[in-house]
Amino acid sequence: MADIVETAARKVFDRYDVDGDGQVTADEYRKVVAELEGSEITESQAQELIDSLDTNGDRQMSFEEFWAAMNG
Image (tube, rainbow, N blue to C red; front, top):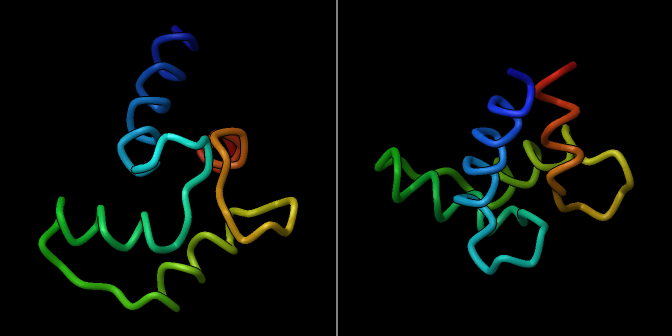
């Protein structure tokens, strides 16, 4: 069961990782929110969300950071 949940989480993460580099930036997050939800958020709002999940201080969100937040 955990594998199914992790696979689903990976698909969500990959949707936001527009360039496929394994990191979600604030710009990627902002663009996907606009596309999926039809709502605009500012770059600083997007960065604030990324920073809240970023544990290594690189101002990006890796899958591991995303997964940890999902299980926190």
